[in-house]
Length: 142
Length: 165
Image (cartoon, rainbow over all chains, first blue to last red; front, side, top):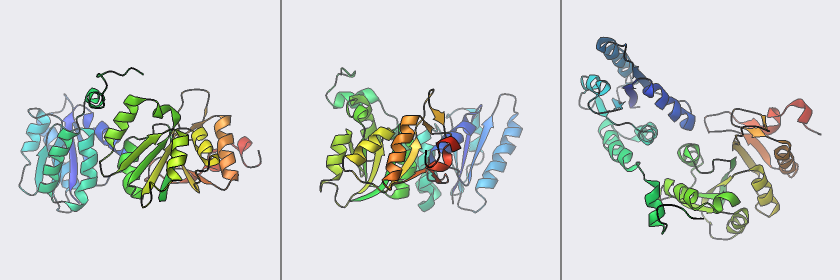
């Protein structure tokens, strides 16, 4: 199975996993690396290396989900990029993680990464647009 | 129609239902039976929009759900039925919407209800409702998500409110 590593600033990564497991139950081959301000880049890189080794040990590849393009978690992750072996998606959201946990069973790493990139973007919704398209004025008068 | 899950969940359609229960029971139709949500356009629209288009969604009052599930409209569908309260579940059953098993998912409350598990808080009226359904032969179990163990509802209840109350 493709492994998933969530890497973020502060404790977001751990919390993302906790939120996903609240919905899906315990997940296999998923790890989190939370990078805090007191952590050196070296330590962070080692923690990420360990996580990638752990969740990717069966050879199906690892997808790293990071919080923000341009941030340290993404920059460190980029050192691990390797075609067919390690992929990265930035801008994690909960739909991306949940979909990834389920969709990885019957996809290869490249397919999974492509699917999640589109899926996560489409998961951003503006509820007032739903109202407008249903004939309301952006607010609800009951 | 196959009723693949009947569940009480005060959050109605939400993450656990969409991401865990729907694939687990392979549902292709979600029916919500709850008078309150039936009258709340915003919540209704948002829940409808959250469900993938291959899955049919019907959100209505308990009375509407009884009529729908007893019609031929959902023939060949695998239906996941959601109630918001124990009262919804009893009213539906007594109104002719028969189910053999009932799943207790989320019934959170802040105060005035006894905590039976981390997601279930019930008051005496809830217990009476469940007792009534149990007596009618409904197998009631608590299970928040498929990954959780399934526990018979009576096992959660303090001894003073056990069998033969």
